[in-house]
Length: 267
Ligand code: ADP
Image (tube, rainbow, N blue to C red; front, side, top):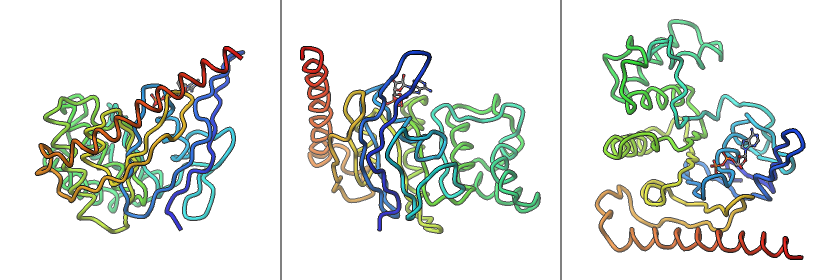
């Protein structure tokens, strides 16, 4: 049984009299310990898909099954890293990591210890008492990652976690996440990451799911068969081959959606 199963998910947003079909029959599965990346053009529904998996948004039809049970609300075993970090500015790094633990009812001493451990894991020892405005973008995202990991999730969701960072910082954080993911294993964590950066997706993921232009549908599912660690393959043909394959599927998804819109308008 897959760890997570997205079944025929459709999502219509209704605002006043306007309806937006964001997702149109999305299907995919994620296995235990698998790293899946979702790529697609801006506005195709990637974040919406992630929010539905997180239980923060409801599908209009279809469902997401986690360990055999449909997701209807946020689940402590599924945590999220946000593009713009989502830190509370009036709380220190450590207090930010503690927030979800406190919500889960973890006692004060245990959550302080756990927050410290996870801040160490992302190399932020010594910054426990620093407030977000005194941290760089990369450090803020390290806090965001520590906060998500402190919940010991079985599925870690990441919504464009590196896209607001400069490339050098993004590169370091990609390797940090890969390192942590490879070394931990307790509990075994699957990762679902949204990205609009194909090279990043191919560098990090076991599988890249390609979505079409809005309304989002799955138009490609590419297994990235490059050994890890992948840094040594970055200039190799095998790496560019997979980047090309994903790009090709993105282009096809773009064209087929345009055609179907044009056809439906002309009929
Ligand atoms: P992506 O992450 O791929 O850029 P999103 O999931 O953010 O795409 O958005 C998909 C579509 O749904 C877009 O057209 C967006 O404007 C629309 N949308 C997203 N959230 C809402 C909302 N809360 N209300 C209305 N429309 C929304």
